Image (cartoon, rainbow, N blue to C red; front, side, top):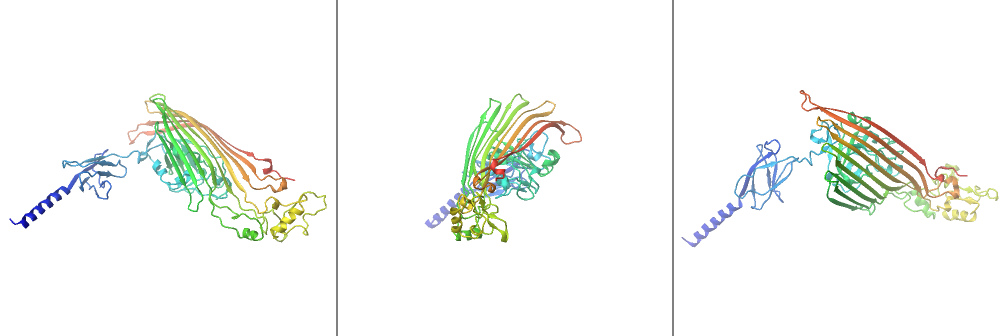
Length: 554
């Protein structure tokens, strides 16, 4: 045999052997762990690659591997993903997938009068937002997070709309915020002290809860019930019901921080949150959450033409005159505690509550110190052709007529003429140009405080009767202030900073909820009968601010 023939035969043999070694084929079937039925369209891939296949209608699959070290990943929506090594003896790899209850069938409280049930067993559609969904956005504002996760949930930014600038009332399905109920662990949360006195017609006059007084790190899951909500929760829930479930782990510690800003260099925010779980004896838990948030303002305003004209006349106008953007949120601190303790095999004691505070401030429009659109009653009296510069005569007996056109500079005067008048007639005549030579931009805001607490006992009997007795309280305080402005009626005696007023909302309730299942042969499942009683009171107070904020001066 020639050397060439031997070489060819050896090469062919090596090729056959290497091909045989490379062709590692794994086969098998995939079945449902609950029903035992074959599962079609299950994805089977080699981990870390795009090499894969899907199961046929009888649950069978076949896949060629690259090596014996490959890991197979079996996945299907609503089922727990499995990672398995192929058998080394060539046997079939049969897989059983089990439903992913934690991700798809989370226990829900809203939409049912029975014990917490799986969302797929609910008689009405419920959206369940998991912690992973809540963390999937870069925002630290719960309203913005929910807007990105819930269809028909809408919340707007209100730059110059009073209290709605700091407590943004959300709308669901295009209805008023007053038509939506917020529950925490199935218990109704109190409303904020903020009244929407300005804004769009949809939110005008509404008074919803302040969801941002709950730390985002304390949320276990968020449930949204839209259809059929009013049938169970009354007219207040025509738009829908939100239920926020608090984290209930009895061990572990987690810390989360976020930092960011806009591309234009403003709006920098910092959020730091921590959550910890502790056992409460052997039969309970205490879960504590704490969050700190600070958000700097943004401004997307442009210079006013009138303000630029005043600048050309020498006025020291601080441009831009109008600040238009997100408000400044200072040192928002929220804390929440959730605790439960089993008193017996069928009775459980529970309690939860929290505290929050933050300060927010924004800007009103720029007050012009001169020109035809100078701020009325501060820098200008009258309007149109009759408009003159606003002036106060401090001493009517000194013989100086401050309103005389011979000495009072007109509204279109340059800055030097106004300052000359101020210097010459100081003590006799007063212009607010003396205190605010370049005009001013008032700053408005509120110090917001919130506290809530719920405690109760729940249980069941051997006959199936479930009961729940609870008491709750909530209080929200809006302490409004305004700075860098004047009460013109007080002239030179006017302060520049005011406490305007306080709005206080207080709510107290005691609840008894009971339900009992009745077995009927004609029904697929027991007929649930629910009843209960409630005592509830709401108190809204408005308190006056500083004397100079509402009084009329001499």
